[in-house]
Amino acid sequence: MLARLLVAAGRAVPVHTLIDELWPGDPPAQALSTIQGYVSRLRRALEPGRAPREEAGVLVSAPPGYALRARTEQVDAWHFEGLVKSDGTPAQVWAAMDTALGLWRGPALAEFAELSWAATEAGRLEELRLIAVERRADAGLALGRATSLVADLEAHATAYPLREEAWRLLAVALYRMGRQGDALAALRRARAVWRDELGLDLSAGLKRLEADMLAQRLEEPAADPVPGPVPDGGVLRVLVADDQALVRTGLKAMLDSEPGFAHAGEAANGEEAIAAVREARPDVVLLDIQMPRLDGLAAARRILAGERPPKVVMMTTFGSDENLYAALRAGVSGFLLKTSPPEQILAALRAAAAGDALIDPAVTTRLISAFAGRTDPASPPALAGLADDRLDVLKLVARGLTNRQIGQTLALPEEEVGVVVKSLLEHLGLFDRAQLVMAAYESGLVTPGAK
Image (cartoon, rainbow, N blue to C red; front, top):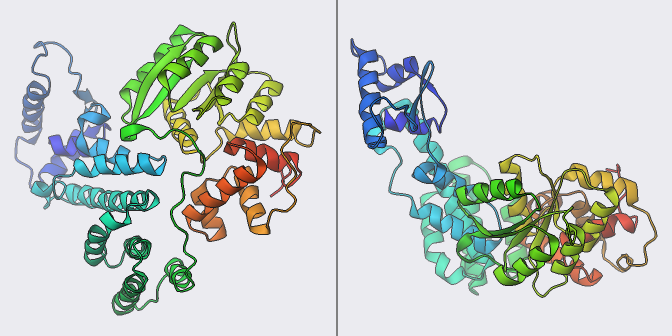
């Protein structure tokens, strides 16, 4: 019963469903009282210090059934899934996937394999495990760790020969080690397996990889597309700056309860924020745009002018469009409304740390529509001289696409998109993706509302 409630991931499971799924086709005569007995025993085990008449806080009554309320980090499967679906720089992804795979203890729900609900969930978790293996390897290749990955990738591709990503990763790892012949042989093995098993040739992506290897034009791993601090151990350290104590307290509680995040400090005004950044060296600053003594915009400019600055995400309740636009041009990684739900705030912080997306497209689109086309002596250099393929990438960056989405659109490897974005920043003398968006609109390369 505990396993079935855990599989529900906090949602209520009706009593009749519990009876049907714990004893499929053959429930005992006193099934309801048996369920109630299980609930009583589980509650004593899960909350041993709870007073006899005190309301349960973990296994709760949720008519017409029961639900298990636990924090994500208290349940390995929930924590595992959150880590596998997390995003960030290659170093962050490597650490997150390493932690996720460290939670694995063998086939999921093996002791209940004969029950359909357990078999379905076990299959889902196994797919997430394979994704974690592949995401870890992909991050490792980006970090230059091909040599240490080859043996594991060989075993992975052999065990799961129909997985395209398994063969891609193995071939790239071999190629990066200087074993071009072995890399091409791996792709030939994939082709033979697919023809025998599926009657299909290699996918377009693997054919393109094979052609790139034959032409010796496969890129070496690049540094992160946007320079910035890389969090240690995959934990994103966030400094909160807001003049309202209640807002700071709420954001701190959110960060403290979310795996992969750490509260790095707080500030009540712009001057305190600048000092706290120097002392704490956070990865991201969550900065209110309107604060006393020194406002958020001025503080952001000074923070971003420092050596190896953190990413800055602005919070706003309304704010003037002039200030928001100026902040984007200064290199702020995006905006959040203070009313945003926690999951949106956390996603925005991850995206800012990865340098891979602007936050709240609705806000930036409005600003661009209002201000694009103005003559500004501080605007970046003209885009003349950029090759068409570079301009294509810049257009898609301006539309708010991530590197992965750009790669899918242009049929390019995600790593190659990162290299192009980095070269665009260097060519234009910019340091943040948000500034690339401004450059694209201000130069007329992209116009608001155009497709």
